[in-house]
Length: 279
Image (cartoon, rainbow, N blue to C red):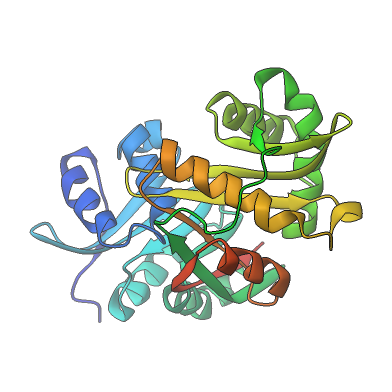
């Protein structure tokens, strides 16, 4: 019997949520950005935040929107969140967060929400707060507003390769194109162009006051193996640290050894392990 029920949190508990998110600034970055921009009112935030703990001692939270993300979820909190979520239809496209919490949730929810398309149990979470020691690629720059159409095919290729499905499948890519355009307009998309074609790209997909989280790192297949990625990533990290946030973070699949070597050369250090369940 669970002695502490899960409840949906509202704007009145925003400060408690923000204090909790500050305790896990990297794994909880996506949730922190949404809270900072939209607050906790579900009709504005396009998702709900479930809380575990008393009103005077909020222990864990769980974001439920396009993704399901537990933050600082202890074993009792995981059990409580899973009990609540098992009564609801799955609407999220993934579960992502600290590996122990994600895998604990999936162990309890798989009978209700399964099967998963893919489970990635070991994704190193990395961060840095120092400028890279390697020289940045001077050709890597922020993408301009008029270059969205040039960037979009590379973004689709990256997404399809990384996630295993095309972002064009659901609505012809309209939502994904809008997301790419938003990142460009916000100055959060980077690329290197050669003869008008994108050969490297990356985005600051999440930005909080604590970190800028890099996602969507991609090198065109014909340019792989030439040593481009390290200098290109160094350019992204340098600009993000100077212009955007005090740290840069990202997570990577454990089996992607070339990418992990690139990130190590750029000064990233391990700060935890994430896991992702994809539907």
